[in-house]
Structure formats: structure tokens, C-alpha cells
Length: 133
Figure: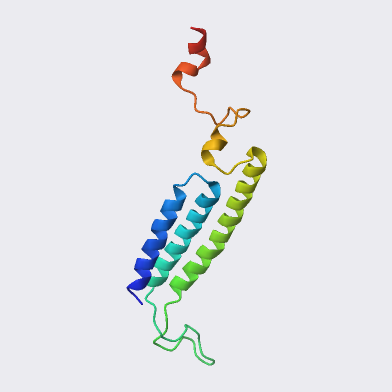
């Protein structure tokens, strides 16, 4: 189990990178989610999965009875999951808004919007100073 999780995390991370490089906004968002989950899985596997007791303090005691599982990876992953949901909600809202405005989720088509020139790449030959000359 301890050797399978890092391999699985690497495979999910590679899939996320592949999807991140696609031109669709939705695939890019799915790639970000996969990368986030693979990092969580890597943290979980680095935290040494064990069958030890949960880190709970018994009644009348001030410290948990040894041996107990390390709670730090679980706390980090829980925080990362919450931040990941916030990022996912923002990315989906941004993708929906851009789809409503531009009518496409293709990132190359978004740059070719004829009405929007603010995102266009202007070369030196297309600057107003060079057009007049």
C-alpha cells in the first residue's frame, strides 16, 4: 500500500499536467483539480499510513496514549481540501462567466474575440507609431 500511493499520486499528477495543457477551460480546471488531489495523496502517503490509534486524549489523561497516528498530514490535507474547493468554485464561476461573455470555452478562441482588443498581442509593426510611418 505504501508503494502504490506515490505511484498513483504521480500518475494522477501527470494526468493533471496533460489536462492543464489542453485548450479547453473546463479541461484546465479538471487538470488543476487532479493536481490538487495528487498532492493531497502524496502528503497522505508521506504521512506514513498506519493502523495505530487515533490521536485522542482519554478521559483523565493529559496526553494521548502511545503509539498514536500522526495528525499533521490529516490536518494539512483537510486544509488543502477546503482551499481546493474555494479555488474550484472560483474557477468554475470564472469559466461560466467567460463562456457567457465569449460563447466558447476554447482558450485560443477567447483570444480571437474581434471586439476585445485588450487581450490581443500587439507586435512592434502594429503599434500606432509604426503604422503612421
